[in-house]
Each structure stands twice: as C-alpha cells, then as structure tokens.
Image (tube, one colour):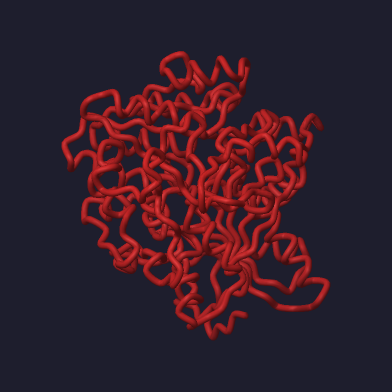
Length: 463
C-alpha cells in the first residue's frame, strides 16, 4: 500500500540523469536458474560457439550470463534512449474515479516513441551490437508489428539492412504498421512464405495458414544463417531481450520510490515475456532477496494460453524446429492460434525466466478472452485519453478486475501495470469489436493436444 507524504502528480517523470545506466539481470538472484538452452542435435547445453552463427557475439554473452546482476548500458544506447526515455509513470486518476475504487492505479507508458511500443528498448540495443560487430544486417520476425517497426527504426539509425518476416494474418490486417517498417527501409515478407525452405514446408503442411510467430522465427533464422554478414535478432522470449527491457521496471521502481509509493500488485501482458519480464524483474529481485513482497500477474490471451494451459517442458522455439530447445511453458511449436486472435500475443511458449518463476509459484497467470479485453481497452481510452494496444489491454483488463475487487472489499491496494504501447495501427480489431463482429476463441483440450504431441520426447523431458 502506498504511504506518500507528497502530492502525487498525474505523471511522474524522472530526470535524464536518473535514467538507469545498467540493465538488471534477474537470473543472478534466482537460486534455481532457468534451464539452459539445449542443442537439438546433442541435447547438451548450447555454448557460445553453438549460438555465434545465429546471434551477435555480445548478445550471446548476455544470453548465457546468469551470474552478473547488472550489465552496463553502452553510452551510445543511453544517448538513443534519451530521445524517448525516461517514459512516464502515470496515475490513472480518471479510471479510478470511473470505477469508484479505493485502489490506486498506475501505468508505465511505453508508447511515446515513433515505434509505438516498448520494443524499441531492445531493438536499439541489438542493432547497436550488430553494427559494432561490423555486420551488414539482421533478420527477424514480428507478430502484430511492434517489434518489426521498432527494429526497422533502430536499423535505420545505424544504417543496417533489416529483413522482417511478419505473421501473415497481421501483414494483412495491419498494413499501416507494415508501411512504417518499409518507410524505415526494412523489407517485409508475409510468413509463412515461399522465400525459404522452411516456409515452403509449412505452407505445404498447412495450406492457407494464417501463420504464427513460430513460423516467422523459422524463416528469419534460415535467412540469417544463409546470408553472409547477417544475424538473427528476436523481440521477446530470450533472456537477452528481457535484460534490455528492464529499463522499464528500473524506471518504474525509481519513480515509485521518488514518491514513497509501495505497489501491491504488478501486472503485465504476456506473449513471449519481454514486457512483463522487463517490468517485474527489478521488483522480483527484491522478492527473491527477501526484501519486499509483491503480487505479480501475467495476463495472456485465452486463445494462446501457454502459462495457464501449457506444459512445462523443453520445446522448439520455432515451428520449423531449427532453433535451440528451451525449457518453457509451451503449447507445442506446431500450435498456431486462431486467425480471429486480434493481438500480437501469438507465441506458443513463454520466456524461460518467466516460466521458471511461474513454476516456483513466484507469480500468477490469468487468461482473458478478447472481447472482454477490448471492452477494457475502450473503457480505458474513454477516460484516460490513450488508445491502448490490444496486447497492453490484456493487462488493463486484469488491472480493472483487481481494482473492482478492492471496491468490493474496501482495500486500498496500489496497482501498477505496463501499458506497452498504443493501438492506432490496430483499428481493424477495434472496428470488429465496435461492429459486434469480434468473437472469442478458446482452444479445446483436443486442439491443444495436437501441439503437445509435437513436443520432443527424450529422457528427462517428461510432462
């Protein structure tokens, strides 16, 4: 519960000199570390040499580092951050009043940059390390398009080529975000495509498929490993990405401490884990060290419920099965969400870090249906003046639910959630909701079993 002696402004801003100079690596404070990535051929932990052909050298080091709690943010990245950071921590006074709740609600707003989301925090870091290594360009995947937009912007800044494989359903539904990527100089290909061997195989096995992040990852990795001077970069899931995104949580924590505010509940949407992991990591570190306690809630779509209905096992990170095996909560690398799914949280698995924390009972997970997500999104937009991204709106939904529980009990809890970005390029989904054409899709147990059947079976990977 907050205990502030100062009047809380609508927006809490940090000064430039209060910005983080280091990223926080939560793995250093985890007594039980996330399981290592495995080489799918040998089933042994991936080494630097194994990962070097796919990722930038410095990013491989960050991926494998589970001992150093803090890693310096290079000066060039910090200078770029200053264009849009520190981002504000906003007190949702109008939403509180509308709900009639005694709860205090804050959101960390990450949409105040051209890419429109938090994804730029890691995109600029990964582009920097690629440029520093002397590479020609990078390849990647994108779901709803925020990551592809952010990476194209970062690559433009460092004069790197950027090849983006965009999930086909999003490529068709979100043409404006696609055009922003092209404006920044990126090439954008709907996935699965005929451009890669793995894409052609997926199309043959699933004709007419709307695609998935797992499909797009496979294509991006194949392209990166077949072109000299290119590496693959990922917008979520990997530990290196969660590391870069901790600027969100570190800033949020500093802003709260500036006004002596102690949060009770911290909420984030969860697809692959970049936003949620970045927001909660510094607070989770306090919990792991026994300094403070918080309630953490991961919110995922009911149509792609990896934490709430998935299996905790080693699985491929991509549909084409060309990536390492990661131990995570997964629906199976072959699982493809319904095309009706309106947001970008379409990944079949969850970050190994977040999966391990969830498995240890250190955080909760909830799944929500998309019609109630968009109901919360419109309610938020009408009183707070920001049109939220569909992904962020999952967190808004549960933040509202928790605030209404406080209304019932009379508890004055302090709720913090991540507003990952804006939804101005997601108007097709809003139109469907407003026209009454949006429906909910919840996969049956039989639907999920098809994905589970594809999880690799080997000794020690029982689930």
